Length: 145
Image (cartoon, rainbow, N blue to C red; front, side, top):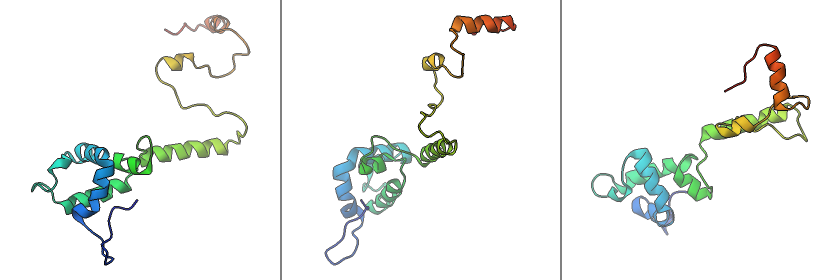
């Protein structure tokens, strides 16, 4: 959805005419983005602090940024997807495709917190955790805390 409305004579409408449909449908996302990104309350537009034309310019910037709430709302996404995160996901997919691991499940991204303790990596050759610790103690290692 492009930001803008056409006049009957073919010209693009500006200001509030262009923002009207977006304000009605995506007001929450607009308010959030204006408050968090611009430190400006959307309700103050056209009170002398900001014109509708300037607000339209900022909305066009928000619409082009996939990391904004407005862009996510217009696209129907559950949450914003910043370009940096998209690039990381692409790199992960490319690395997985490069390894030729078709048919195998990829390792999940690194876990944090308690789940990281439960995740088992590597080959313990069917040994129990106690057997592994006994082998490690034989080589002078201590049990992790």
